[in-house]
Length: 111
Length: 115
Image (cartoon, rainbow over all chains, first blue to last red; front, side):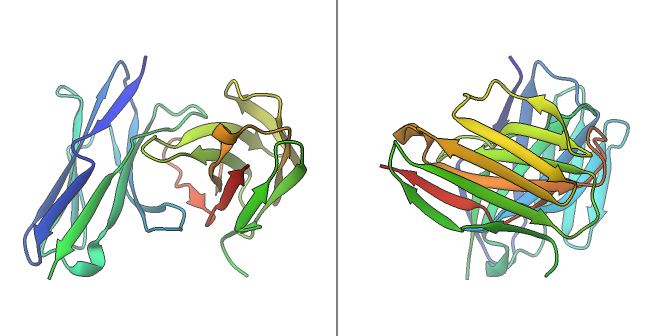
């Protein structure tokens, strides 16, 4: 069955460092991969989308890579800040109605 | 009000109760979704509506009954739920259903507790 794994349930890093989150998938060939941020008690908020034919996408301090050979996406936050502390979700879709989400990685940036 | 709103934000109900969750989107989108989010589990897609027509039903128990009277409103009717149905129920919308490049806009969710 289709499965997404996000590297760790929780990740603590020091302020100013680069946070790297991993999303691995199996038994799936997504056309699109999206990253969302979710704060406690809130719904997910869209951050970035990358297509299967794109290797890298950037937005301000955020960078996403997509390797369809490794079946992996990496999500980087550079110069991390305590305000970046949240749960980050990756989601895959092949363009059908179905979005498949990972369980998320809870990032904590320590001041 | 902008974005996607959900009411109520919190709901406690007994197993024999009947209740409804409401979602409203103010974005002019054509697609609406219901998701279930349980602790330590990924978001589970429950239902998808495109222009008020249900296009996806992910093997959801019949005790959950969706309704989409128009493209701006979505309901989830609940009856005879089980304690394991306790979760955060999220509503989302997107411009078009089935277009993977579309962003999904989520509401804040309804925290449901079934006693």
